[in-house]
Image 1 (spheres, one colour):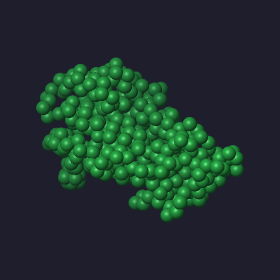
Image 2 (tube, one colour):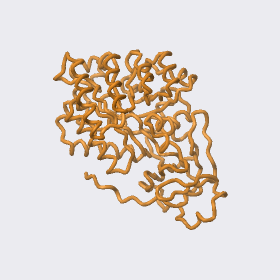
Image 3 (cartoon, one colour):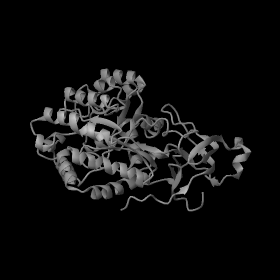
Length: 419
């Protein structure tokens, strides 16, 4: 594979005869019938009822939506997309009775992917990650977060983040990079977790930030990873570098990491199966998004549900993501995650749709450019061959995508006729 951009067509013109879901809300789905979107120079300049189109738009290219549903482009707001190897053997071990912690302590888990990632060249990582990215893009993903955390050294964290930046250029997609150097303890620092955190804070993070490879900073705060004090050291460094923070929080136990992250104004706290009421209160006060990851819950055969009802009652924004990674969520379908969020976590359809659009944008700090179809924003929207919005949560195993407009360009047409 190469880094060259695709020869996508301009999306400029009038997209008419649409059923438009422009501003997904968790409380309800409001679709505007007989609607239109006008794109000029890759930017949305008008939306509304087709009957109210201004006359001068008639001179623009016309794209017939044929009554299809138009939604904002989907956003996968938590992934570990760039890595080497795979861990199917660990999946088999867990099926045979081993716990996630047992696999990790036996030398598997994150460290096995660290070894494979360190051994891979940047070119090899790009090729493997590009294939995975294309699967997500084909379902209408228009923005994605990519975490590091499988290098655990300056050289190899840099390699992961460079690949993420290259993917954005090669595929005309918004990629937000998150530094997750505090993901696990590298083998050369066994028994010296404080020393490794000092390395992260004093050397790796500042250098990669100076190289403009980092958009946000994350930590895996857990009893098999890093404690609250170590997490706060990383957050303080991020704050000094003017980088927003996120957190892998309360996945396996309640470390009260969510409350700590919220005190630093975290964009999001993710997983949250063991989130406490104190954590919920802190997230609500800070405006921190709760990112639910049903793929990991499913793969790990977890039975401890995240407190969805309490989050809903508190008004905490809820996002949904694939958590794509080789160990605990080898998922490459955000549509499947919508279904799982509804069936496993009991989200409503409007909550799930908002969770992969509006709230996912908020979790990445992209709320002013993604997650809605609004005047002044880049044209990122998807046309779906469905009769009801609920079908986006209902079907799995098929892609009802008719067209994808990403970064102001028509990236995919599957309707069999011009649009």
